[in-house]
Image (cartoon, rainbow, N blue to C red; front, side, top):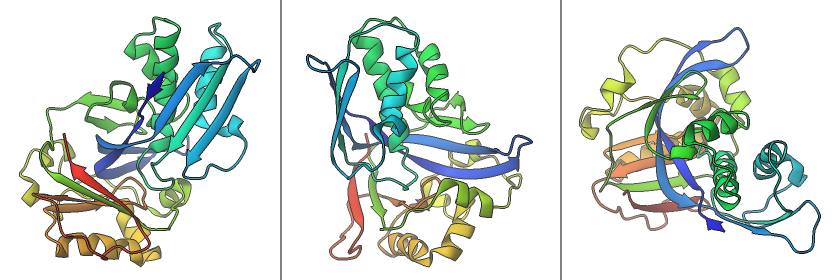
Length: 272
């Protein structure tokens, strides 16, 4: 079975408070986008457990630490199914705030559920996905949601960016999420993000904010420069996604990019 795990962007991200368990409560909107990996899963005829291969962006480290394999292990602990050959073509960059690894893991759960008729409901799949990572469950239903808690409490929203052009740029910088959280100062937002996103996009600048930007931009000014360039190019709204390092801009139509973002990963397209 071949599936295409997609990325997400964060529209606004308020770090509200630090919890007693050391995590942080946040408020954000997760919005799925068209940038995808490709994940293929087949019943193996040669191995006794699983085989894992990857291409595209280089994956380093032991496959056992990969969230796809962890998703496999999680369901294998509860259900019986044959050995598998797993192949991943990686296009969603790491350390970008795009949720690529989380999406891969959640799609793996959905693939196994369908391949072997495990009859797991979306709600049950979300609970399993939460064991793999806080933002993994959003990729089960894969729809825009308002997220709170540690990013794992979802509220459906009537919200669409259909028709806008999304330009996404990631510099050759990896921002570690723990580092980003260690530098941010939690605070209660002045205005409700859920209300702000219902305003016209032209009014979002300076209102729909990502709390990570202050600390990340101070340490990596080249990321701030990307956001500034987006506005210079005519973006209606631009922001860093998650804890970075990718930056996106929303445009009425495709902008002229030329050599503006040399040495960066660039993708774009009309949102559906």
